[in-house]
View 1: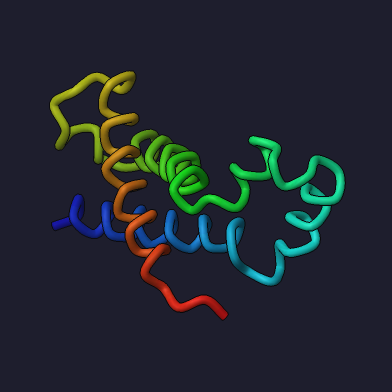
View 2: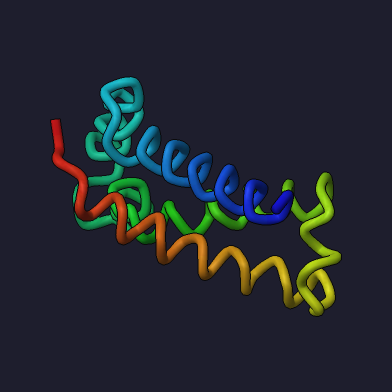
Length: 105
C-alpha cells in the first residue's frame, strides 16, 4: 500500500510540476523570454512548451527522488540505472496523457 501511495504522489507531483512549466501563468515570462530570444523554431523553446517532453524530465527527477528516499526500489526488481528510467517513462506517459486532456485556461 505504501508503494501505491508513493507512486500516486510521484505522479501527482510530476503532473503538477510539468503543468507549472508548460502552461501555468507563473512561468509565462520565462516561456516568453525563450520565444523572444530563441524564436519558436528552437528545440529548447519547443521543449518548454511540450507536455510530453517536460513530463519526462520532471518524471525522471521525481522518480529519482522517490527511488532515493522511499522504499520504491525494493518493489522493483531492477537496478537503479534501469529502474529509474523505466518508472520515469511510465510516469511521463501518464503525465503527458493527463496534460493533453486538461482544459487550458
